[in-house]
Image 1 (cartoon, rainbow, N blue to C red):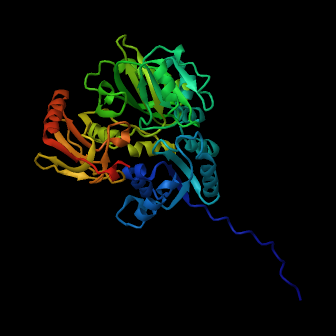
Image 2 (image 1 turned 90 degrees about the vertical axis):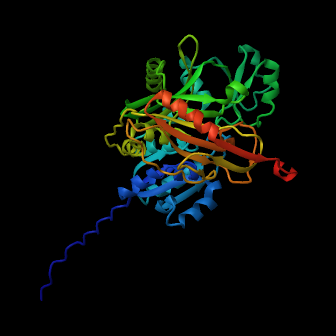
Image 3 (image 1 turned 30 degrees about the vertical axis):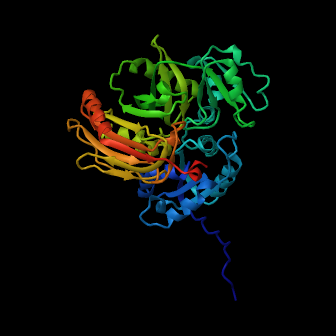
Length: 455
């Protein structure tokens, strides 16, 4: 009896890993920009999020709500670290990203907020994914490295590392100066100082482990430049005019953004300096948000640059100004797809209102068709339909960023702001007129706090 010839068994084909995209940053910032989540979900990509451990409770609660954007997230990894400790998030980030690499085919990654920009750059570099590049993500996350790599663009400065406070000689700089903690964001700890004696005293107030950058104070109007970059070339770039608390305080909290710059006076020199600065960073793929001052001599001076989405309501302003959201184009760049974005067609502005210190009791608005919207620090911003190019000027929203009963203090950092509004108009003059009218229609009501509120 003959037996059939045995054939070697063929191993089963390895099943394809699900395709995924990694978003990183503070959970509340990611959810405040739900178009990233919606764009990725529409492409059928698994959405993975890496966020600090401090957001665990809020994130897990939000994911259980089918109406919350967080319900679109497939997995969340929580990592330990501190903003004032250089690189402290990296070990946990690397461990979680490596674990996902074995379970998914990672098609792209993007840092929505400032917190994990450097670590996201490492992920993109390790996997060969589109990203700003190692130099850009590392330098953009460190104020003192920006002064090293981009020295030609900024003011004279002094770097004071941990353990170097006693040896630092603040008299080598011309005063006034500005002190900046090297790794924080949202203007936290940034203070103007008038003389060397005051600077020595201030150094003692920063935590001992923190690096402090001291730089000669640049003067002049402040701007930012937003640039979409693909394959090292800008595909869109625009100048935003900024106003801060500087005129009445020692701090530099942003109070207004205007997109585009209504005057356009310094656009040409800013765009030229910005392009040369990005070339010096070797910036490859992503969005850059750089901040500048233009002095009386007409020369731009670089304040700092970030390799991530611009903060505050700038994405909303660009949507209102151009008629198109920017987030889908950012995702295209992160996936290696061809991106483009139109020029602004309307003038837009976001304004943050000052307030009397105390307990937030109420916010009132005397305006037809618009009511204050209480979104809280982690709340969702509303979506609105942009106006056509020639539509009348419009107040789009008045947002309350704190909860009723929150303790409001002086504006020392961006996190201290409580009320903001967004508006747009077909002309710059119309925008100014509308802002004045809205300001007179808003009242922020605070009440004296109890001793318990002070702590």
